[in-house]
Length: 80
View 1 (cartoon, one colour):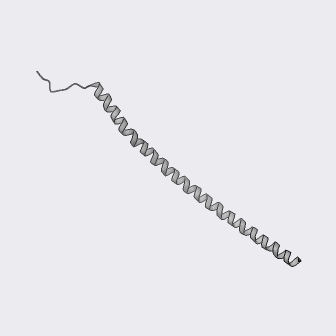
View 2 (cartoon, helix red, strand yellow):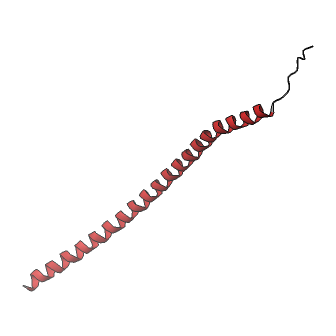
View 3 (cartoon, one colour):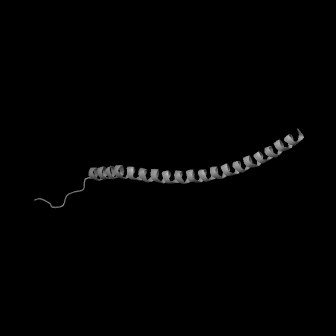
């Protein structure tokens, strides 16, 4: 007599779980790496904006100093 139903092997279940786990781990890693990449891109963009603003501020200060130097030079020329 043969039975049409087969028994469930615990070893097969464990092997299936391990196999699925090994398949899911790379997917999770790819998702985490992608999220970190996007977050780093946003941070880099924010830093770039801050650096641009700092550059503009420094250029304004340089322009003001150049004006002062020009005034001082013109005063010195008048004195000579």
